[in-house]
Image 1: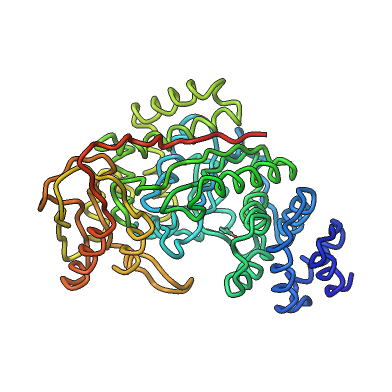
Image 2: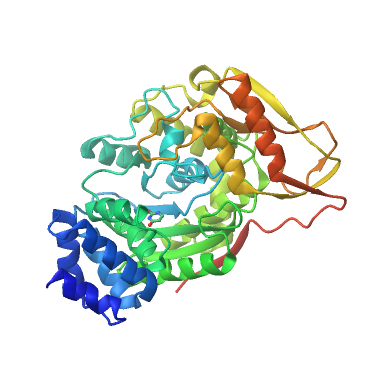
Length: 437
Ligand code: URA
């Protein structure tokens, strides 16, 4: 296969065959295909798309660029969830221990935040001593003994995606559905799962802001994953406002622990978390129906078992043994906490959610380049949701910042994200649609 002939075929709208895709991905991984050729191929796909069979072949070739994990030694099903990302999306922190408490095994390989979205791994890094990069033996042991482990991407899982994504990122070719599909699924297929549930976000804080685009991405992900042999369904969920009332890192961990212990639960976060848990339980045969899956998940929360599993996971991966009961002792607190006064009376009509995420980034809680360091202590709490009644001067949120100057700038930015109305708006459903084969 001559790379230039392969690229020409895709450039001219032709179909490329699986063997040539595999050879191209091999060259992409070992460096024998040049950066220019990878970029040209990405642009050809960006403009011409890919048929499902081509997408499946690209995804499988990228999966096979590194090692594939094997969970067949587990006594129950290995299952995971992937979210396309958003603001205040700390679902993974509750979902993994809930599903583990119901008999599933969740080897969760998650990512760092980039742009306006937060990353599960950055949140877990707020916990002192927590090892997000354990060796394979420890990862396998924690999943088997505790039921779940939230860790970071390892270098040997789908290495083709690392180079491909870096090139797409600087050549304006990220926003291609077949390329996003292959990128996300190659990593999930390499994780060796028995089933996968996708949380595809839509709304002003989502990667795919328009409902139509989110549905197209969800349909592609579900079709290609199943085509590649991984049982997968997707929920399309609302990201037109932050999902949790906290956005940041340590503040989202605190919010997650409060959720697990029952001290405090944001209603929309609860709806999305339980719906995703139920999908995972049904997909693995651990619940006969979504309603039973939700009931089982609620029971795992109510008995304290999910909170206990979260605590055991944290300590098995190097964190404190008493983390769940003593988050205040371990999570870094920001030195400055400032309210965001509401500029108006009325009801919260809408929230520019992407800008809320960017306010967290500006505080130092997110990154604009992959290698940036982040400040785990900063962020936002008590974010007023859409529909909340507020009076002028009352807090819309609290800013947690390193300096007074940064806190004041963030308070201004957050206030500007809010729009108000004189009538209470209808609360949109947090779970909008289910996509299955
Ligand atoms: N997330 C990924 O992992 N890959 C993409 O291409 C886009 C989002």
